[in-house]
Amino acid sequence: MSVSSPNPAVDGTPRIPADLKASEKQASDALASEKKDFIRQIVRDDLASGRHVAIRTRFPPEPNGYLHIGHAKAICLDFGIAAEFGGDCNLRLDDTNPAKEDPEYVRAIQDDVRWLGFDWHDLRHASDYFEVFYLSAEKLIRQGDAFVCDLSADEVREYRGSLTEPGRNSPFSDRGIEENLDLFRRMRAGEFADGTRTLRAKIDMTSGNINLRDPAIYRIKHVEHQNTGNAWPIYPMYDYAHSLSDAVEGITHSLCTLEFEDHRPLYDWCVDRVDLANSPELVKSLTDKGLPFEAAKPRQIEFSRLNFNFLVMSKRKLLAMVNDKLVDGWDDPRMPTLQGIRRRGYTPSALRLMVDRVGISKQNSLLDISILEGALRDDLDSAAPRRMGVIEPLKLILTNLADEHTETLHFSNHPKDESFGMREVPFARELWIEREDFAEIPPPGFKRLKLDGDVRLRGAGIIHCDAVVKDADGTVIEVHCTLDPASRPGMEGANRKIKGTIHWVSAAHAIATEIRLYDRLFTVADPDNDDDGKTYVDYLNPDSRKVVTGYVEPSAATATPEQSLQFERVGYFVADRYDHTPEAPVFNRSVTLRDTWASKA
Ligand code: ATP
Ligand code: MG
Image 1 (spheres, rainbow, N blue to C red):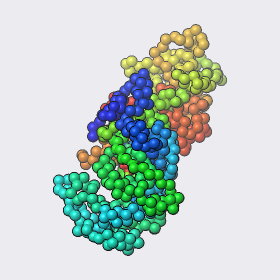
Image 2 (image 1 turned 30 degrees about the horizontal axis):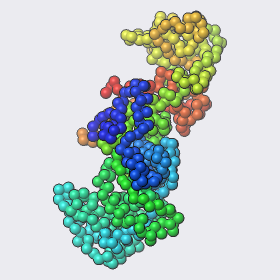
Image 3 (image 1 turned 120 degrees about the vertical axis):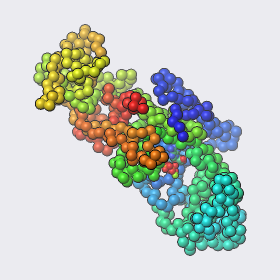
Image 4 (image 1 turned 60 degrees about the horizontal axis):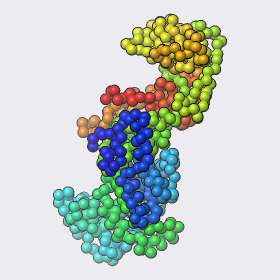
């Protein structure tokens, strides 16, 4: 894998660099809305040729963890394509593995799909189909397409051969049909111990595709299943269960990630040999359970996984990060889980925009995280109301205003969109400004406040700094300024040219606020690279979260949980989904206004 700009454009989808200007962005978004990618083209052709009159897709997560940003791509494709072409998409929980699959995950998956803006035609569980899978396996046995194998796992491996050597037939592959049926039924009845036997498809031990070398389709596992309890001591293998689930549900286009490309021949083999559409006895086992059956020959189509640098995205590693307490939980705002980035302030529209920009191809690549962050900035630039908030406060006193001076200023909520309306901002003699907006010894080119210098207070007028007050350590604790009355809004000097503008809040009116300054969790682009003997744990960013107390104007504090705001000049923030209240506000930094990492790279 190599780092590249999004979308290697193998299928005619536009190539979009990370640093587009606004006008270019609009153009690229318009292009994206035509969506000419190869999968949509296949769907278009299939509808035009009459191969399908309607399409159906599915999103099939295994409920063994929380969904992450990568899944957002699959969700947007599966649900998005169905919606665009007037079809349906099922949410199927792929629960064929009775290992730890938790109802907590099942709930979160549904929550995440809905949050992204999609809804399913039907909610299914692969375990709904255990009976039809079982009967289909008996059918395969009767057709001479499957046999019970007594080889141990090690022996199976030995017989399988390698990429360069063909495999050898199992000594059990010529068992008679009756013996196979009897043994398989006894597997199902729970007579044999785990691992002693498997049911294997009989395909071709010399195939160049190792997946076709008589793959196991059932294994013995005396493990309780969260849906079916102890009803089944045998469980179907992924390729078999997945292809048949698609066939049962009438899935026309089964979209999956590239690692399944080599499994496609097995997928097709299972669908063809079981041939549900021409097996009334199998269909009956479904309809008897109240499950609809809509015949379609599903077609598997693979696309590349979404991978970003600076992130770790496999469920296994995310689970380890949670268990090792490297983060606060699955919904820690630094996690790439959908629950995490949602709490961080990512919006569904930002994620959909990101998926559109990245496009669809068959080439795996590691994308730059700036594409993800850029999509959020672009979405929030138009969607987030503006407010003023001070992260690291420094007291500023306007010495020429009376102690009790208070006034109400009127600010527009969005510089480019009048529909956001106006708000009232209290202004008074004592303000909080950002500590870094004042410099005692200004660096070259410093345009903000310095002793004897002028700066504009956003929306209030121009001030001149006359004096500073320091504590015993020499730290500046107050700056004393005079406000130029002629520069107030509406006065003739209001537009006097001045280099810098800073934000502020009225000290008497501002609300003290917990501000969680989140940053990237890892300091290196490829934390997942274990080659150098280090693991992602060695690359944790010690500054990925800083919690400070800042001050926000009153109309920021009243934000509702999950509302995004731009604190002018500071960044995009979101009112924390769980902890924020108007009385005790908590804001999470979603993303800075500019990419502060680009210069470090
Ligand atoms: P992980 O490897 O992160 O544990 P998974 O592939 O095992 O993920 P599933 O629950 O099996 O996760 O995935 C459900 C669907 O989401 C599958 O169709 C899978 O191909 C797709 N998917 C998973 N990860 C990505 C990704 N990074 N990019 C695009 N699609 C993905
Ligand atoms: Mg999986």
